[in-house]
Image 1 (spheres, rainbow, N blue to C red):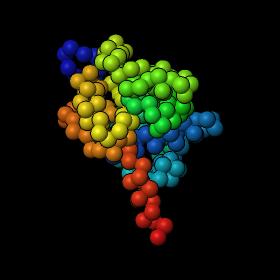
Image 2: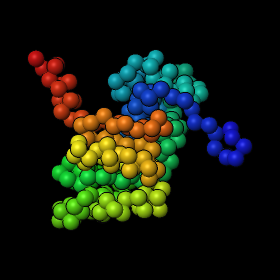
Image 3: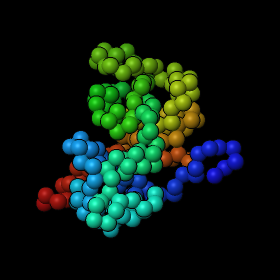
Amino acid sequence: MDADTDKPDKVDIPKKAIYRLSIYHRCLQKLKATDQETVSSTTLAKAAGVTPSQLRRDLGYFGQFGTRGLGYPVDNLITTIREALGREQLQPVVLVGAGNLGSALLRYQGFQKGGFDVIAAFDARPEEARAKELEIPVHDVSMMAKFIFENEVKLAILCVPVGFAQEVANCLVAYGIQGILNFSTIMLEVPSDVTVNNVDLAMELEHLGYFIR
């Protein structure tokens, strides 16, 4: 632990394990909704689509959980995973590019359930997005730097055309954004301390197409 902070060092977890933690969290939330207090590793692993041994390895990053023969305590496991994923409170997110895809994402109700709050959107033509009667405010991109700084935003969703994606990403990084969910079909170049997750819908369909031949 650093001398100038009360927070413990972050556990070094592989990226794929982080992704699986999100799946475990969602499965546990469903169990909690049915008032289930404990769950076995076999049952949770099956719900998450992994093997019990993989589940135990992933949870092992945070110490020992559960009791042999009794399973994992659902509430405790939810709390631990939420803390690991930084979801103790809603994390503010901005969206850049409020076109057709961006506007659809602004209407998506699932972000808050996952611990994220899209608090504003930015577009080069905000008046066009505002005409779509979105509940989330859409501002001109010229206001983006000030807004991100004042609201301490670290996460952004990028939905701009390919030709502008790298330029906008550079601005986001300069404004303090540390994580980008990229819907633009281009591999962004960012510093090593910035994380980019790419969402290419056409590529996902291409992968699915392989299995239906």
